[in-house]
Image 1 (cartoon, one colour):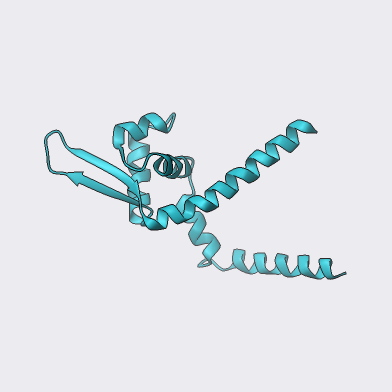
Image 2 (cartoon, rainbow, N blue to C red):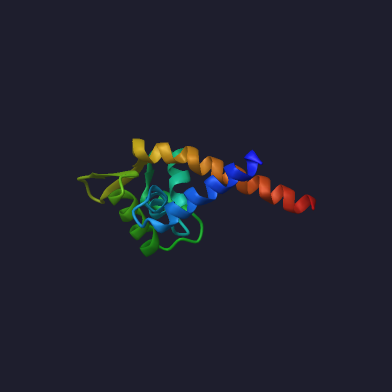
Amino acid sequence: MADVKDAEKVRNSIRQKLQNPESGFDYALSLVSGKFKMPILYTLSVYPTVRFNELQRYVHDISYKTLSRNLKELEESGLINRKEYPQIPPKVEYSLTQKGQSIIVILDQFSAWGEDHIAKTKSS
């Protein structure tokens, strides 16, 4: 009976989070929503400093415009650093901020859940 009450408490907590437009859930989701933000963050966790063209090669099927827009959004949210060097041709490097590094742990867990789910689906 305690399990049922605990499950109900969890569901009520989730309902409250979904009903509050300024919840931590919405904030966190807004930071990584989109097709390419998580792959960009993962790439920067593997390769600590990456130039734009390298990043475009690592993140498959992303256009110049989409990569540029996603990098601006990630920079504005404080997840990545953009360092521009005053030279010709221009050189720009991207890296994770401390805040960006902290979200990688969560993305790892999310990925592990997906891999586990895929394995269970294949074995069924």
